[in-house]
Figure 1: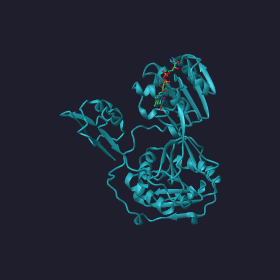
Figure 2: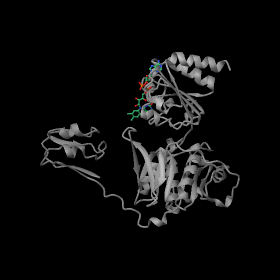
Figure 3: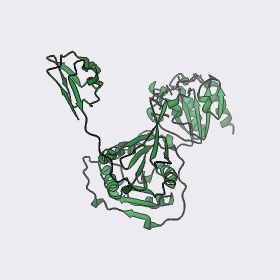
Figure 4: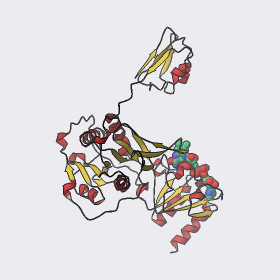
Length: 396
Ligand SMILES: Cc1cc2nc3c(=O)[nH]c(=O)nc-3n(C[C@H](O)[C@H](O)[C@H](O)COP(=O)(O)OP(=O)(O)OC[C@H]3O[C@@H](n4cnc5c(N)ncnc54)[C@H](O)[C@@H]3O)c2cc1C
């Protein structure tokens, strides 16, 4: 991409400086100057310039794949952390099975990780085939290495669709992989289906702050790639039959790796909270009125054997850390019981918890939107209702 300023035309009026969202333009000696390290070629300055002195030339779009039929099967990236398969891998296998049934293609898992029984577990969870790059050095995720491996496997075996979890791992290296392959990626999907006529993957994700759902197609490029929020789909159940012949191992030494980073040490996070795996979550919102209110939320969570969640308003107020945030820009959760205390039920909060099995809402406003999603609605002051619940739980 290229940006040019025509110095014959530029009057140094500075309108482009104001229009630039990236502070990439300044005016010196009555001529606009662009800092190419900051410019992202969005073209806002081009539209604003009254004398048409600025031009942005964009690269021609990548040509599509000429023979789409060369690309077959649906792949699930089987994420592992420290050697343990992540739940989202099983969720994607479950959803992937439904998708391939209308395509008449295979459901495959791609595993990059240490040796062990993970590849067999993926077969047990429904994969027809597993492509595996197994090596002790792959115990921990590393961006460059995982990207090089996945790009190599996709170029070699040509899947039609690739799904990965929208976790910190998936969000990190799947966009790099898609960019290398010059294909499209829909990030953070909440729904997937196969278009009955075109057989394309319909990838649905929230947009405009969660107020609209966008359905995106990748028509000309392959693979069609999506990252999918964890806890949106159910997990594939385990079966007992395993045919090890369905595992294709590719040696790490066959793959050209261009690693720019050295992993020195893995230090586990200090926050001992795993919202996405919790069966019971008690969440507090702005209705707590003060940070100390979370002590009461924690007491109820502890009494029920659950963990503490929160709305973004409580996180923004500095009452609790971001690790607890549930919602569109926090975690997506699917516990057996979700108790929302002093949370209004904004669409961005609901986006992270409304597939919970049972939702209990405590709110003093009987018209609060959260009650429309709740299975049990407790109208009243949370500082009266929670102590009453605690007494009831402790008396049992
Ligand atoms: C792009 C974007 C992303 C966002 N992402 C998220 C996200 O990930 N997660 C998220 O939560 N929000 C998110 N938000 C913010 C969201 O829109 C809301 O602002 C937020 O969820 C409100 O939090 P809340 O329900 O705690 O506060 P409020 O909306 O202020 O609700 C407080 C509730 O507490 C009740 N209440 C007050 N006192 C009491 C009491 N004593 N007892 C009982 N009830 C009481 C009130 O009736 C009210 O319903 C996002 C917003 C945007 C624009």
